[in-house]
Image (tube, one colour):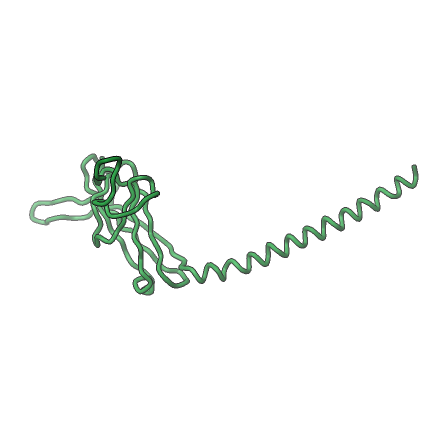
Length: 167
């Protein structure tokens, strides 16, 4: 019995050394991976987005005005302004926005967007998309996206605007 009791602590120490050795190997791999990640992230654009929502109103004698949206009513025309900032990297990138269910899409300022009517599975120009056998309508749009080409991305920042109507 004494030998078994003496042997057991040695086995625990050996097991502990193996565990420490494995833990160090895993830690070394994790550190190596962590060091590699920033290099990959720098190669691809690192983008920050900010957005604001405005209500478009028409005032006699003043024309159309945008006011920050504090309260929305059915039928209000809202304008979304998505600002992007390139924080690092280079090349082109894509900005994708899901639309809240409380609005339906109207259009964007530049007309270069693609839309989805199926939750982002398929993309295209609205006039080319179908739901079943019918042509999709603005009310069907679930997502909108823009491809920002490398030459525009090189500016470092930009804005994308689109409008919608509150349901």
